[in-house]
Image (cartoon, rainbow, N blue to C red; front, side, top):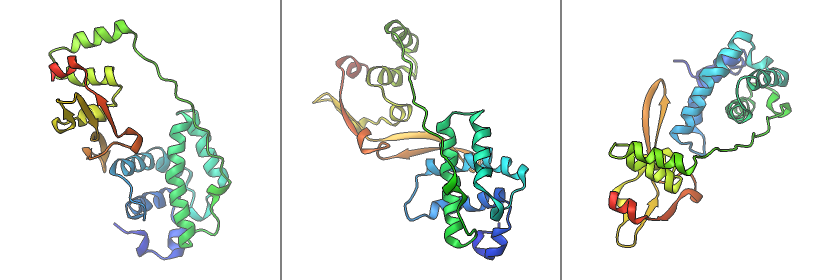
Amino acid sequence: KITLSELSIEQVSNLLFADYMKMYLPLTKKRKKRIQEITYAGYADNVKFPIEPYFRKKKIRLKDLTAQDIQDFYDVQLDRVKPNTVIHYHAIIRLALCYARKMGYIKENPIEQVEKPEKNRFVGSYYTTDEVNELISITKGTKLEIPVLFACFYGLRRGECVGLRWSAFDFENNTFNINHTIVSTSIDGERVLIEKGSAKTVATLRTMPLSLDIKKRL
């Protein structure tokens, strides 16, 4: 595989934007601010679809890319997905174009004239008491029983439920810590599990009271 560093400035400048995005992608792992594997997986998925196929069809070269081209891409995607998803596309395109400007592949960065979509407000739905009781009832005695209990009673995320370990529990003081997560993602076409020794942010690192009923079940 040829890397960007093996090409001249002019050669990179003349690359199709679709090809440039694919070749830039591995460089996100070498940025000064280290990114997590799951973040890279997200970048890779977004480049694979819809960024690369859309711009490959347009046959736009890196040096010819305009703000309008990017804006048109966002408008097309907004008919398909929510603004928050398009914001993820914006993130990797912005990184790639900022790098291109820094390296001299382009004279001006068109992303600076692009309007990023506004975040859509998430409104979550929730189960009624009867629905929670039914869910607990039908999962009792199965491998889903404990994860369901922690999700229902404590609002734990999927990765937090799966990431719970015995070392997180203090059965003397009836508490447990949320400090480890496991997430499933796709990296280079392979499905992998990623373990993290801490939760997503400082705010998600927390100690919870352990219900006596759940303590008995554990």
